[in-house]
Amino acid sequence: MSKAQPVENGSKELVIEGPSLYPKQYLAIMDPARHCFIEASTKAGKTVGCIVWQFHQCCLKAGHHWWVAPVYQQARIAYERAKEYIPDSIIAATNETGLYIKLINGATWTFKSGEKPDNLYGEDVHSVVIDEASRCKEAVWTAIRSTLTATRGRSRVIGNVKGRKNWFYRLARRAQQGARAYAYHKLNAYDAVQGGVLAAQEIEDARADMPEHVFNELYLALATEDGSNPFGVPSILKCFARYAEQKPAVCYGIDLAKSVDWTVIIGLDENGNESEFHRFQKPWNETIDAIKRIVGNVDALVDSTGVGDPILDMLTADGATNFEGFKFSSQSKQQLMEGLAADINKGFAIRSEDIKNELEEFEFAYVNRRVTYSAPVGLHDDAVCALALARMIYRDTSRGLNAWW
Image (tube, rainbow, N blue to C red; front, side, top):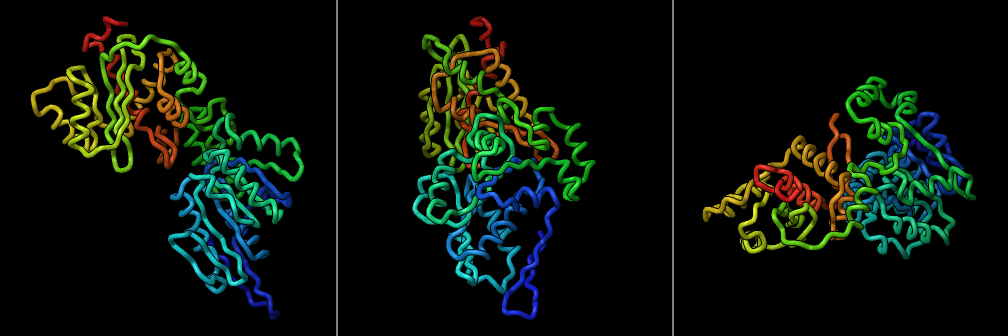
């Protein structure tokens, strides 16, 4: 993004010249409506455009202005980009911890996380951008709407399309149908090509590289029924609603904690249904003791990536042969998740709500021309990985588990 520049015009006013927006981007983001809902494809210019829009709002009114992203890391990225954009001559102060920029006119532009929506209540705010809205909780919009009431503040709600079963999709449809004070716009990859933001060949390469439903959401901003969930939400719910008598585990999948993650152990019974679910954070010596106590002599597939490799060595140090390692890579994880997706579509019983919730949050992303599978930024996928490992070992007929099929 090019930096805005102050221009001397012979008066006492300071004129700011910033980067120009391409025509459709300008019409979408600078719409005079109080609340704009903008569904946009990846790299269509929604973030840059909204930084320009909110900077204008900060120049027009002193007081509070908020940029809200799903998690802190994304809020910081927007903060750094905005700080680069604003001329130094009109910045009164910045705060790297609180992620705010104070302007000389008294406006304070703060970049916030939507991880805890209750923290968004209280202030009177003049403008808000909700970034990556399809990945924010609905409670974020509820809180934000209340902060704009006293000021009659304005909002821009922007994000990639992520299925039809989220509040952003629902309110975008209301805006599209002409709800009062709402406006709706869509920016897709071909709009960005026309605007000179993206190269046409890059779009065609992406179309050739990825499944059609992935391309439609990421580049055309066309919602699919399940969004970016590779398992299918209806199939997940059918598994969760499926009744099965609880039986002893005949195999386990184990995902080991990394940094702030959790160790998760999932056992499957003779019919492949969830039998046991354990989730905890403990020192490594206690983790090893817990795994041995829970698993016993039953076969288990263990995440042996990174710190998992020495843990696997310790689990087998006493001669135990029932633990086998699985190393995650982008390719092996994709294959593992595709196997889990096939199993979920066929159907088996899932008992734990924690597993169901992680499965519903799981999504695909397109990174470096590859489709990857993971939890959204800031969320965990420990239970999904443990379940995928358990289902993989269950399908391994060399262990004799086919006797129960």
